[in-house]
Structure formats: C-alpha cells, structure tokens
Image (cartoon, rainbow, N blue to C red; front, side, top):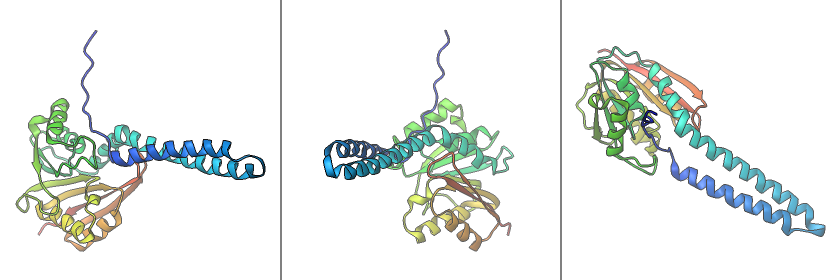
Length: 248
C-alpha cells in the first residue's frame, strides 16, 4: 500500500470569528433548551417564543461557522484559481502576492510560471489566519513543489520594501481589508501601482471595501479596471478588482 501524499495546510481564515460563532451557537442552544423547560403554565407562550428565537440564532451561528470553515478548507482553493484566471501569464513574470499568509495564492501562482518567480509578502499576523508563520509557508511551498520559485518577505502593504516598477503582476487575497484606516488602504493601493511595471496587471480579492478599491484605482493611472463577482465559494462572499497599470 502506497504512502498517503502529504497535502499543504493553508489554515483557517478568521479563526477567532469561527470560535466566537461556535461559542455563541452553544450558548444559544442552551438558552433555547432552558427557555423551553423553564416557563410553564400561563408563561408557556413566552418560553416557546424565546426557545424558537434562541434556536434560530443557534442555527444561524452554526451554519455560518460551518460555511466559514468550509470556505477556508475548500472554497478558497477554488477562488484562488478564479483569481489567477483573471491574469494573463506568459510564464516568465515576476509576481508579488500581498498578504501571502501560508502561501495559498503564491504557490498556485508559482505553478503557472516557467522561469518566473513569486514574492510572498506578509506581516505574519496569526489573528487573521491560524498558524501564520514563514516556516509554515515554506513548508507548503515545498509540498507543492514550488519552493525554488518563491521568495518570502516580511513587509507592510503600506510601505512595501521594493523598488518602483519591480513586478509584472501583483495579486492579493483577503489582506488589504485588514488595514482599517481608509487613507492607509489608499496608500497600500498606491504602493501596488508603484511597484508594478508599466503595463503590469493586478488582481485584488476581498470581501470588504472592494468598491472603494475600484474607485481608488480609477483615480490612479490604470486601465481596464473591472469588478468581478460576487462569488459565494468563500464566506463572506468575495469580489475581485482587476486592472492594468498604464504604459507611460
């Protein structure tokens, strides 16, 4: 019997949110049961009403938690391919993945390259993705067979450690929304265009502020700006902004 192949582990997105939903669901289930049995006699109607309300809340929280976990393990693998299908690759590109995390998009990009190279940049925040660490990212790249095509960098999207016009392609998945200040998000999008070569392509996947990204990019020197989605294989549903930096 052959060995079971080792699969990359791209973690769970927003693990704290899933944990909180799980706790909420358990609490709501307990309250539903207590309400059903606690109120008797003339107050039976109140017990039944509360039991139904708590029960519905339990069900919603449970389904959302399951949906989020499924999207972390299955949905996001499918959406990363949809994201990359929006880029025209020749195979020799120099690519930047902003907020690469465990390498989900970075490794899939590397598989589409021949002589090209992918730089994965992150600040390694485990709050937004479980087990987010460069060593885990390198391990996943090795399992995917693309370790020689990737380079991992620690850096902030608002102040990228790269010279201008360095990359042919810039991609990002579920990263820029973590910048809470609008002006700083605008700064990060400006950095995307700064490090892109003239004619370079970008594709930004996110579930928040996507229309804002679209408007900001339209104010910059870009062309072919499009909004794709929403898509529901990830939770919350995501959209993708694509475009190309103008050739001077």
